[in-house]
Image (cartoon, rainbow, N blue to C red; front, top):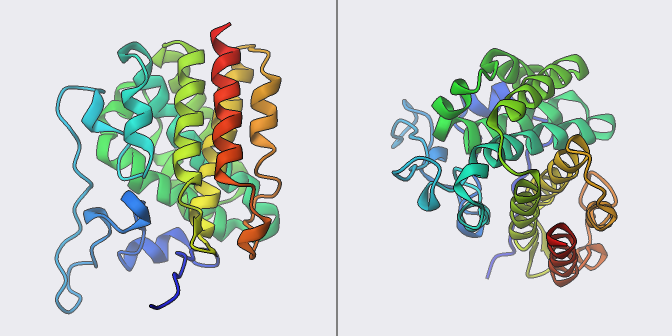
Length: 259
């Protein structure tokens, strides 16, 4: 059986990846979804299509685009908080890019934002536009990965979060659920999926950001974020925190938020 090869995005700009049809959505088990078909014009290729979005507003089947682990997290969050969860979900990709940039450079940051656009923004773009999200700012961040552009992307998402309303405790729970679901895909029989590691880290950072913006005292959440000690995944799977530890700490966060 061939060894599992993680999806490597580092070093390629989001613009190049989009042009090549390579901005993959993380489907169940990390497989590529319909959003990642080769670009039209390639031999045997068909035009790319967005991941399917469910009916009925923010509910159940809509999930969070193509991300593994997202649908269950969305379904567990009350209707009134799902729009805010959607904003936080996208913010996680920008935060991941911001965290990765010092070591990996702006192209890696751009790629992470671009992945968020394909996986989370594009399947439900109208929902973001209703909140006044500056799409141009997001796409600029996905092109450049420059610090100023990442900052502008975060600013428009923070403004959208203020309009989305919802219960920040429920949003934090949803984001820790997404982080946990993604982290379960990082260790693939001893091979590290570096992309899922950063996506899960971004979800954890977004949960922390929501809590801080809401003035929630959440030391359990800070401990949760520390389970991603570096923005880059370790090469050796043995150096990863066990998925069971991440799940257990997420449960502690949820318990603390319900007190």
